[in-house]
Image (cartoon, rainbow over all chains, first blue to last red; front, side, top):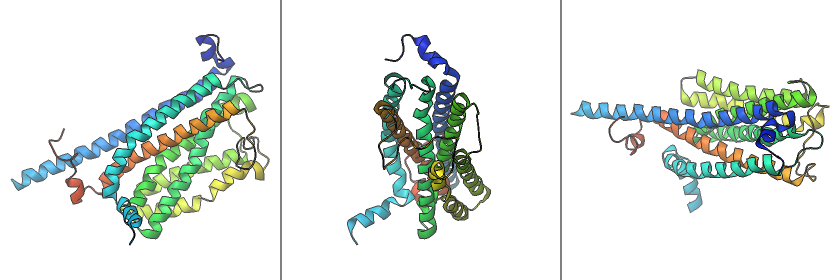
Length: 60
Length: 252
């Protein structure tokens, strides 16, 4: 184990800004990307469902 | 015709690939999360403090995987684009288009983590050395590919134009890889190579390789998600899309 206390862990031996700055941005972007892709998927699905509904109404 | 060939072409069509991708996505997410947790554990709790760089070196555990993926994804993207150009298959262009944003993200992360690592170790966020400059060009190639495709309304023409850009840009990948050998760079040489023993502690190496696997699985998962959306967008008016169970039922 490298760390005696949580405070020591977060301090990263004085490199906190750099280590957390890179891991943090990486984590944020890798969480954001799938959320955006999911939105894209549900928006095209919504459009397709509406179009289908409109077609059904047209034929009635 | 033999069986394998038939299957290959079957999954090459968007109609059969769409449900297949849907089934694969949760598995790749699971692998990404498992490798990610193990990799992060090794990165912070198993790998020892570096005798030169202290704790600052831990940036390597995301910097190297992101940089590897940015190059690897470019090759995969260009391969799909090239296949599309040569064989005129519908899925190829969609795959290339689905990979590009994730590749751009990886290229950005390699630059970002590199800059943030360079500041404490070299005293500079950025220098115009061959490795950094060629990696920046890779990022621009991804952005160029995305912008070019977005600027052309007709999807098939966008695929063709994008494919040519992607294929020309492939020349940059070996330049990035060998830049630290060909030129004197501030950036260090490769710590891991296929021809000689890695120049780093075993636990550091394992941490890096497992994080690279996590990034790889992440890239596959998110690319498959995006290609499904692209398939629906492009094939919106085909019969098979209209008959999908996801489209049936009341609009929400």
